[in-house]
Image (cartoon, rainbow, N blue to C red; front, side, top):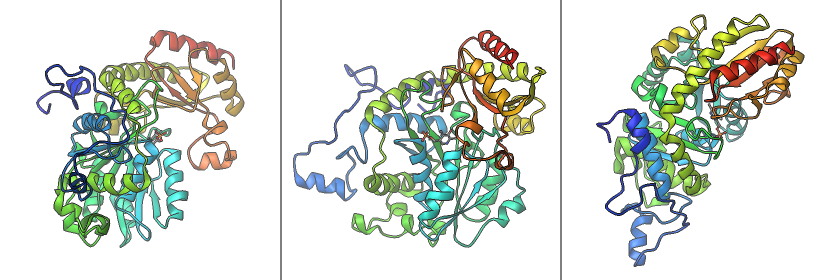
Length: 427
Ligand SMILES: *Cc1c(COP(=O)(O)O)cnc(C)c1O
């Protein structure tokens, strides 16, 4: 499929049926796989033969869908996970263990921030958070001798900051560590971080990739460019023998393009088991078939809505990288020339009460803990995801009490704007 354009890959990559085989990808709804001899099975367990033996580790339906996403991102290997949270946890934990350190952008999804700053901290992994606007020197200063990775989001949820991927990749590589980028919001349709130097790309496929609020899921893609063996002291998990596989050394046996995902599958998936169900992988693939068509409409609607809100006298500010006055507009022109995403965040004059009144008055935009759906939805972070914070704390983390996160669906933009207009009139 590599000769085709990304729109064609969305529809057809990952699975090519043979003569008389099903047109749609088969859902292999089976926990296990049959073999003729124990010897055959033994070879699978020793990683000497390729094949499936238990769906906690790998399933053919999942692998077809992961391969489509791998091709969309331009990577060497990929795997699906049960959620975006699992994808980010596995991507980091595959190379950073107790006693290690990671540098991360502070403008990231709240769930990821919690995972890093609270849960993984309890596991003995330390994070230093830096601004996405930090200079090369400032990012460099956050490194320690035990730093194993750098992490950021292409477009942060919900702050809508745009990561300077090239800058973060450069500093990471100068220190001999990979850059992990969560590319959930732009999707590979609007940005392919590997082309800018990212080494590992993660996704919450729950968002635009599924796109219909049908299934929670995640994905990890390896660029296949980071030379683990060059930094063998730093990555013993990849570069020294794994006793649980009779001494296989992943970086030697599976090479630069296969080591990361193989270890992540046969070690982390085996032991922690956050696999996506084959049913959900099938639904995810249905979403991927129209991803390129939907992303264009999400972005077109978001641009019209951002412009409408920006000109409205009851709106105090609008964050949208596509807007020419936006702080991240120049960065978006470089990394997201075809559009950014469908999420717009803005403030309504009158603070928290006005924001609540406005949202209650929306008829098409539903109040939900979700984004990136075909249907328009919105959330008031100060009353939901950031509810435990007082106004002072909200200001400190850039989530203002009047901030509304509005996720433009693929309905008609005129209807959405009329809905926003009548709701703003209620304030
Ligand atoms: C939603 C989200 C996640 C978490 O994904 P789940 O599928 O909900 O576990 C991670 N990163 C970003 C950018 C997200 O928007």
